Image (cartoon, rainbow, N blue to C red; front, side):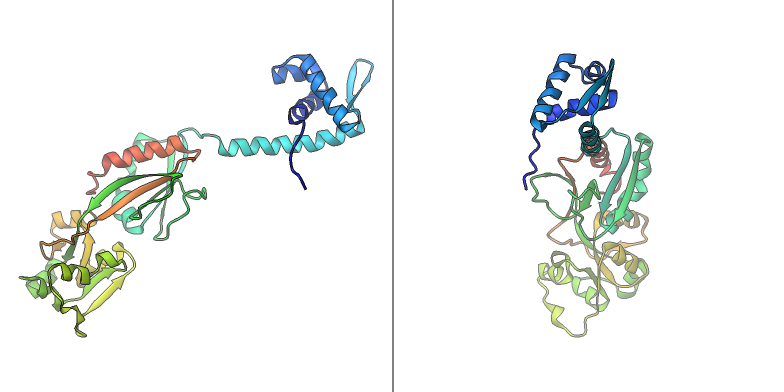
Length: 299
C-alpha cells in the first residue's frame, strides 16, 4: 500500500477553510489570495470527484464529504504540527539530561554543578550516573560523559580531561607496610577496576616485575572507581586510580600516592552529544561551561 500523499497543499488550504467556512478568512490565515484558496480547493474537488462546500445564501457550509475529510485532515495536521514541534530547535531554557560514569558524576561533576546553575538558572540539569552507555540518539540523554572514544559521525565529541592513573592508599596502611619499592605493595590487597589497561598486572609489568603469578597475592576487583576509592579510604588495600578523582584527598593528606610511578597509559574522559539534537543551545552552554571548569575540579 502506497502512503504517498497527493494534493497536500490543496488539503492544507481546505483544512483551514473548513474551520473558517470562508475562503477570504482562510486566505488571510494562509497569507495568500482568496483566488489561490479557491483554486486549490477546486483542484481537490476535481481529484476527489465530490463537492466539499455548498452555499446557503451567503453562508458557506461543508458537504457530508467535506465534513468527513475535514475531520481526518484536522487530526492529521495537528499530528504533523506536534511532530514538527517535537524536533524544533528548543530555547536555552529547559531540561538538560546528562549521563556519566558514577565516579565522574559523583566526584567531579556534582560538587561543581551549582556554578552552572548560577550562570544558567533557566536550565534544569538532570544527572544520571551509569556505567552503561546510553544511545545518544535515543532522546533519553543529551550529553554523555565517559572514557569511550566515539566513532559516530552523527555525534560531536570533545576531550574533557586526561589524567594519570596512580596507586593510592591510606596513611595508616602506608605506615604499616612501609613502601620502599614496588614489591612492597604485594604485601597488601591490590584493588583494581575491571578494565584491562588499568590493572595491577599492567602496572607491575611496566616496573619489570613479574611476581603476580603467586597464589598468595590478595586481590579485589571493583566495578567502579568510586567503589575502589571508598575501599582505600577505609584503609583496605592499594588502588590504581585516576589522579583527578582523589586530588582533593591527596592535597589534604587523607590519601597518599603509594609509589611515584603512574601507569604509562593515562585515562581520558570525553563528552559526547548528538549533532541533530533540538537542545543544541542548552547543550552548548553546558559543554562550554564544563570545558572551562575542567581544571577547577581537579580534572
